[in-house]
Length: 309
Image (tube, rainbow, N blue to C red):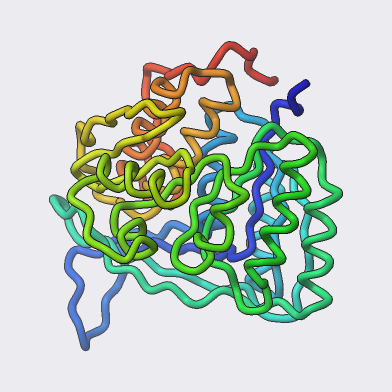
């Protein structure tokens, strides 16, 4: 009855993600990094990497162009993630996170806009998704680049949904408004929920209730150091605040999303999948490089399915 236990991920706005460690960021001066970490990034690839690290089978459809696109593709080949690449004329973007000395729990981030797609490139991407392998979950994460009409993307998601995939989205603004009608699950932060609802929200639980009242959708709303909340099938599930605050917060929301879907894909109860997502976010914040998880001696299980070789 259900689809294959695979998470299909749409990566429309990938990036070469670079993290620089510096002792202190000195504006207007030369700053030499103490360490540099480079990953195949953007929100979708970050969450896909985390889900794969937690034993989910993942298939990514990714739009890549230029020398940066080749760098991203080469790094994806080194992972267990199955990949379908749609080649673009435009150069894949670069994004930069600058993390200052010990004791800091914030970063300075510089994010380029995603590479635009021509009408032919978008048509090729949409066709690849529509014809893609069966999946239990279909995830859309990150900004929609120029040349990707949100309404047409919603139609593609509706086709996959009609074939049995459950749709999870981690997008914001107008894209969220356009996609929410075909989503089974929405993951946003409190600020993004407030933006789409047009009003202030007291906390994550308030945001979940407001999203359900407006759109009738199940949701997970994160709220940084204050934790998160989920409203699923009428049940409110609180998520505790992080137990630790690492030096590398960039990508932690993506890690949460990847961990959550890995748990759900592995048949964990929703509350346990949320805990897996929270744990993944904490591990992300302890290691440089978005979507890379700090090693731990204790392994958190993502479900009953056996680990692949």
